[in-house]
Image 1 (spheres, rainbow, N blue to C red):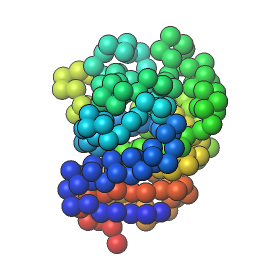
Image 2: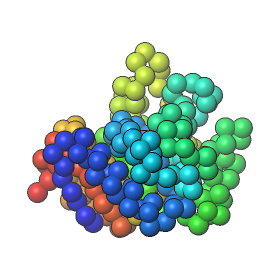
Image 3: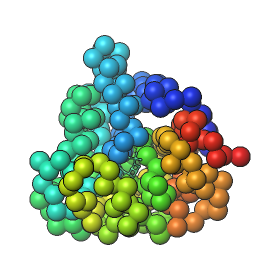
Length: 237
Ligand code: F6R
């Protein structure tokens, strides 16, 4: 595991964009698992600036959706596909996407998703945020490392942290997530962690016991790079 501590969220985003750019230069047909949530937004905005300046070409990469709420149309502001589209796919000019098919029932959608990721040769790079309860995607605690892509009910902790995203709208209670199996098989993992509210969970993920009650603790078994801002990193030994 590599840990880099950055002095601000902006510097973290610049470093994450450098990391992403280097991966893409190495392999233009990169398959990337893409988190939404607040943390990676500055990074995606920095990548967009690089695309606009024609320093970066993302047209050959395949983006893979990390998670989605159940029961929402894509036009709903809470749809995570919609969020990924607005913040990542459109601005970076990406048209190749593996996503949860909204026209399928949850189980076949998950089976199809796993088959498409396998056909693509697996995930090259997973760009992840850290859930306040240690979740990855929506692999909620407890999730063991073999957990597959599936539908599940969100924990109260995730419901309350997700409530911050859309003001008055209620938070959906059920979701689909790429499984721990896919995340942990990614060739490289980039974990982005920002803010004092992530201090405790980050130190447990990196320094505590590996346990299903903290799914992020299993990232230490991958080729992991953690970029943490100083506020998040303050709790580390
Ligand atoms: C989002 C996702 C979540 C978030 C996590 C952290 O697609 O999968 O696991 O990465 O909840 O969210 P933020 O970055 O908003 O603190």
